Amino acid sequence: MRSSVALLLLLCGSVAAHDMRPTYPSWGISHIADVKHTRMELFNKRADVEWYEIGVFDINWKPLPFVTRYKVMQIDYLSNVKFDVYISEANSIAAEYICSISKVKSNEGNAPLVSSKICSRFK
Image (cartoon, rainbow, N blue to C red; front, side, top):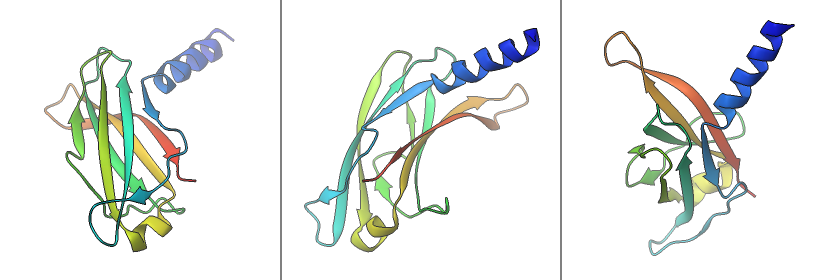
């Protein structure tokens, strides 16, 4: 029983690792023909994590090509960053999720480990 409570607390802690808004973004027009745009905001709630990777995926979780200023961003503890995401109009139709993945350095070298993944779903 004690181990199940500890596991539940651990899972809840990792869920609250970071926050991405809006929860249900939508694509809007951009200043480039045939390119869609959305603006997202990422908030870091963990002192031990400062790197986050951004990804855009279709309904089957296959990655879609997109452009943002940095696909991997450094965000200080208790800080937030707004970022713009651009995607071709054709790929915007298939885009289902935009996700942020926290990156934690492992104890063995510089290989990153995935700590948590937060996704917003497009309207």
